[in-house]
Every structure is written in structure tokens, then in C-alpha cells.
Length: 98
Image (cartoon, rainbow, N blue to C red):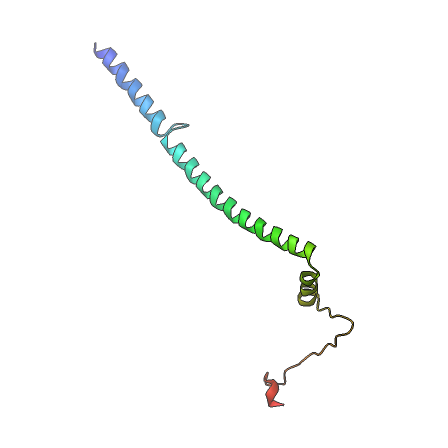
């Protein structure tokens, strides 16, 4: 009778260990849930970025205004009939001083 009780206690301890600390146990599940939550947040950020890029691509494909704006701001381009003026501040940094 005592040996049967001892075997049952050992078996219960082994099952509890596997439940709490073993592979697929509560700690594993919590770690995987946290990792899944982080992945969901990262996916949401990437989805938002993708939507912004898709909107920019659509804007560039549809209108020449967006292309001109980008060429002006990033490349410093001007149209043929326009004149380019470069305003350089004086030594003090204030153009009104000179």
C-alpha cells in the first residue's frame, strides 16, 4: 500500500512538473502568447507603413503634381520657364542685417 502511494505521489509530481515547467506547459504557453502579441503589434506597424507606401505609389502613378513636388524638394529641379534664386544669409545669419 505504501509503495503504491509513493508511486502515485512520484507520478503526480512528474505530471505537475511537466504541466508547469515542461515543454508545452504553462510557462511555454505564456512565452508564446507574449511573442504572438509582439508579432501582432509589429504586423500592425508594418501594415500601416505598407498603406502609406501604397498611397504614395498611387499618388505618383496618377498625378504629375506629386512627381513635380518630389523632384523640386528632393532634387532641386525647376521648370524651364522658372527662374532659380538662391538666398544666402549674411554673416550674422539674418538677411535683414546686410
